[in-house]
Every structure is written in C-alpha cells, then in structure tokens.
Amino acid sequence: MTTPATDTPSTSRRGRGPDAPRRRRTGRWILLSLAVLVVAGAGTGYWLWSGLDGNIKGVDIDDAIGTDRPEKLPTSGQNILILGSDSRAGDNAELNTGKIAGARSDTALVMHIPEGRTQAVAVSIPRDTLVTRPECRDADGSMVDSAERVMFNSIYSQVGPACVVKTVEKMSGVRMDHYVEIDFAGFKDLVDAIGGVEVSVDQDIRDKSSGLDLTAGTHRLDGTESLQFVRTRHGVGDGSDLGRIGLQQEFMVALLGEIKKQDLLGSPAKTYEIADTLTSALTTDTELASLTALADFGRSMNGVDPGSMETIMLPVAYDRTDPNRVVAAEPQASTLWKAIRSDQEIPESAKKSPATGGGS
Image 1 (tube, rainbow, N blue to C red):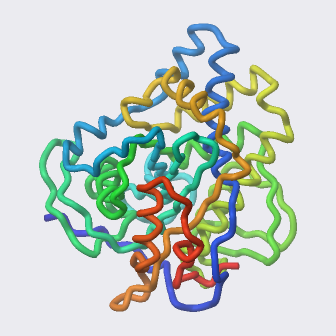
Image 2: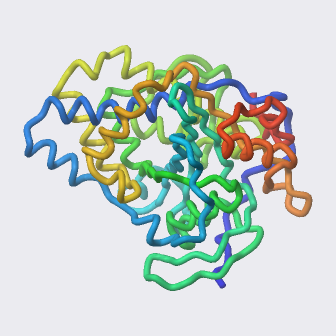
C-alpha cells in the first residue's frame, strides 16, 4: 500500500467566483502544437526530422494498464489525457518552484474530440481533487494497492503516468485513446524561443511561492515569468488551485495569439526551433511517440474548429472532512462524463461547480 503524498493546502472556502465556467479557446494551443510539427517536418532535411523524432519519449500505456479499462466506443471520437508535469528536479529545480520532492501532474486536461472532429471540449481536473486511485503497476512492474482519498496530482509521483490514465478512466468511465505530457521546464524554453508572451492583469499579483511579482497592467513575460504565472495561485482569488486554473487558460490564449502575431509558422528556422523545443518536452503513449504519428494525428484534426473549443473545469465541491481539498460534485460530474462517453453535448447544468475558489 502506498501512502498518498503530502502537499500543502491550496484550496479553501474563502471568496466567491463565477456561477458557471466560461468558454475558452485554449485548446487551440494543443492543435497548434501538432500543426507546428507538421510544418517543421515538411521544411527540414532528414537529419533534422530524425532529431525531432528522437526527442519524443514514449510510454506503453496499454501494456501498463492491461485489459482493466473502459470499453472503447464504436465511434471515431478521440479522448486524450494531457498532463503538464512539474518534476521540481533537473532543469525544473532552478525555476523557483518550492521545496516539493518528486513529480506532480500540475495540470490535467481530458480533451474530447467528438465523432466528425469539427469541435472539441477539454475538461480540466483540479489537482487538489480527492480520488480513488485504482490498483496499478508501477515503473518496475510491481503492483501498488488501490487507495481512497488520494490527491489527484500525487498519483503521477506515486505510481507514474499510466496510473494517472487508469485513475481518470475509472473516475470517468471514458477510455483514453492517447496520452500527452508536456514538461514545464520545456514550456519555459518554448516561451523564450518565441521571445516572450504578453499578458494583462487587472490587479497586483505577488506570490512568494511561485516568485511572481506583477503590478496591474500589461507585461511581456519571459519563460521563467510565464512559468511563475501559470503556477501562481496564492496571489489570485482565495489562493486556491481553482483560481490558478483560470490563469493557465488565460495564458494559453495569450501564447497562441503571440505565435499568430509573429507569423512564426512562416519562418522555417523559427518553426524548427519551436518544434525542437516542443518535442524535447513531450512524452506520449507509444502509438504517438514519433513525429510521423504526431503529424498524422494533427492532420486528422484539420476539421476541428479551434473557435468552438471549450475548456471547462470538472465540477467539484469542497470536501466535507478537509475543506482544503475538493471532490467531484454530483450529479454534475457524472452527467458530464456520461455526455462525453455518448458523444453528446454537455448540459450547462453539468458545467456548474459548487467550489469556485474565489476566482474571477
């Protein structure tokens, strides 16, 4: 039996927030990333392509999980678990991330692309959500017992990415077709490669934990500052992880806008630099762990309208035993996952979260 990792409280009852999540276009970033890989491959020689291809790390999710998985739906819809990993080691240790041992899945999105692939939705899972971790096989092949009331973002460090996939499948009943992980140190390098990203904040943000110190107004953030921005929670709303999710979504929109404004995809040299940085930060399931596979997958999503991409937060409520943690809110969460499983539109009632984190 593995003991759940201990983390500092980051969700509280203080403050008020919106009654319902807003439509976001942050999924464009995911689609754009795949498009960058396609363009880069078309404009470079074989040795450059091979270098990009060798950057990508693969995880055999199917072998690690086995057959204990939800049934794959008989449609052409796709479900992808996207994680932003925060190892706090190696390059990440220099990024003012706090003294937390091991790795965490700092950001988690279930991206659902319905049959026909003309629209998509991404469900953000708050990292402070208490879940039941199923029995899983760890990296050395040994079995780790199931555990209840485990904080979602600790599973990555406890057992590994395959167990995160299995946990999401158990809590949602939705089979994940693919897995994509982006390391946060690589995220920093990506922002630096495009010359920074411009963001606007309507109030001062000072977070000693992340190191972010911004006055109200518009700022151009470099890679380190951008990383601080997406990690910040103590200086926004009630200081919870729920408010931080809003900052992450806001930043991704700004990042996309910067790439489009600079027309980086029109410069082969800059495109290669971005693709090299991005692929170095990527870990995927083995089926996607090549530039060719990623490019093919990107082309298959050409029909998806980025403007229709919606990012919502999994409906959560404050835990009755520990108000610094949240749990999936019912019946909203079950309704949301059922809509995804059946390729149906998600009802507005399933998007409303009792716990708002005091975000704006």
